[in-house]
View 1 (tube, rainbow, N blue to C red):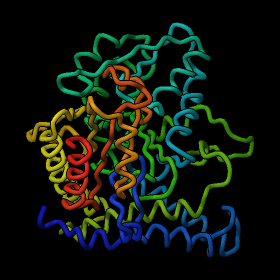
View 2 (cartoon, rainbow, N blue to C red):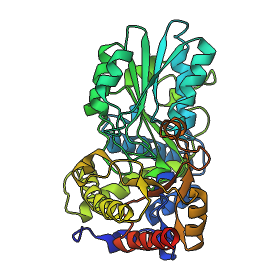
View 3 (cartoon, helix red, strand yellow):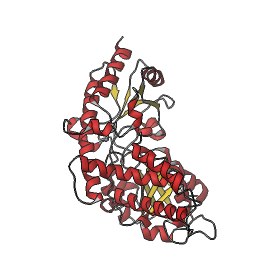
View 4 (cartoon, rainbow, N blue to C red):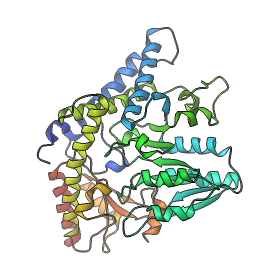
Length: 411
């Protein structure tokens, strides 16, 4: 941890100049000044629609292309044609569920998990209602805190059309064995749709290695603007029905990007990917953008998980606190630094409010992991107290929240 350039990193984020401790990162990260500068520059210089012959439109074209190519590199894709950019991950998933579901009907089956955010559950439940399909629920293992392949296998059949699962939980922080789960589903002839919203801020999502069909994430969770990003196999994006106007582009990615793109946010998206490449360079990585991004993830993950272990060990020393997730130091590679707790003597909303009054930003509730909260036997409205770290957080901030919780829970 001592070798990570934390002071240099924090200097890139204007929001960190104020005294608040931003431990609310699973709900949205702060942005480096390069991202906000890129958004502002695009609004000044490229406030135009695409496809024109004049300078502002050509600048918008360039930003559009750069954003798609940058996200292909970040996610390990081969081309910007595999990237669909939209309003949010949830909206893109609703949209794609309807496009895919046109070919499905009664007798067809979908598999959703008891671990996912509602953004990767409700679109498929609504599709099943509309098309008369059957929904199979995939549980998570209470011992490993993950979705295990041997629990998926019995649910798969020739009728399975799609498996929807998350890469990492936004409540427990657990990382699922996506490549193995995807292999089982694809062997059964099913498509695989991965929600990587909580993983991409902390790990390199190599879509080719995962062998999934779709992977969705949210830019504002990885230091970018409020946009959703969907990677899909180019052939699938090209052949899947698109809900679009008649004169829309017929080829991906424009085929699935309805309406005028948010050019200024696309500029911020490309800058967010560029931030990872910059961080890789600062932590010793060289070579291509992809290699520097991989280096950034490796260095940031090592640093973040050191903070997470400090946090977990401190929480476990507070009487009555129960961590809802993996706690073992030897299992760091199975979680992201999102740590949720409960305490029998305090309501989580009360704790979150008290911490906010001290300038410590956290969340309480089910955090849209509705089925997971139910599975854990939690009161839905109260859920958990969720503390989410990012690589711009510090050991001092971890100790700050631990001290605050000790005072609140042990007095």
